[in-house]
Length: 365
Image (cartoon, rainbow, N blue to C red; front, side):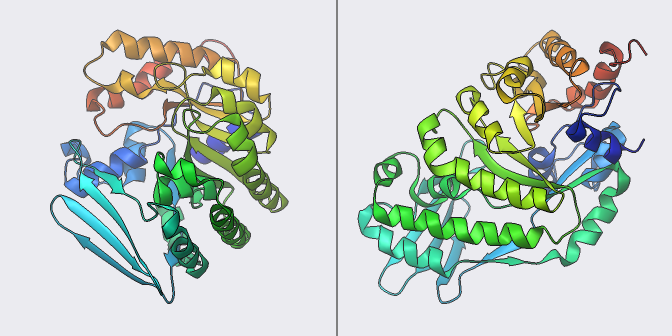
């Protein structure tokens, strides 16, 4: 069985083989490849090539669309320690800023919408938005991955997630949610998102990724029901009508949202883990979502850091692996993704540790 078929079997529940380890290397790889800091043996290697060397399936999200805002002048300036994006509307200028953080990553410090006076301009910005699909390089991406994994068709974030992550922020922005202008922004974004979903259904591929970084620390069950459940349900229904499945990426404590998320018809949830990474172990998550949803994760990011004992990693693998050995719809993974500071020796050893430590569902190897 190919890696791709083995991976897809976890979405059908038909596998009876050994627990399958699928590390999401996308964050780790992008970070190190752009900085020239990949391990020496993996220098100049693509992500699919690295997964082949590790002996694991490739997971490669592909963003085949871009955002265009005809009629809006957008300017980006960047220095060594600050990045600024300026949007020139008809009657107002909106500005977003980022600074270089201590982890050498960009931290957003200013959002385009800072008060209710900016909301009308934000509506104009969102009204102008077009998601422009450009799938011409999909065949090349699929060629690089081949039968060794999955190319996931990546969507934009859910409108509510984008509103808080990109437009208004998670502090003062929450105070604007009851404004009618915010409802208008969400409605516009939702319409444009679902139109893109319809377009994506015409592309080859079985898995579609919603990269929402869903986090129950910031999103209450009530907010999920009001702002997110309908959006997930609409997307899942559209995709199912065309033989595709929806995977949602989570990025924090999720237990109180799991039942409601599963009820929307999503097919997979990436980032499941118990404390300290999240708040629901694989068995706890299974109890909440029912038998039909594929769960992916189980191993906390912290276990890959040098600051923790090797025994911590082994214990995390055994705990997650025991759940996977009893459940055909579990993918073992690092929740929510392999961190950029992962100890390379641990990362290289994980496939062997999993193979040698865990039994298959058919019994000992």
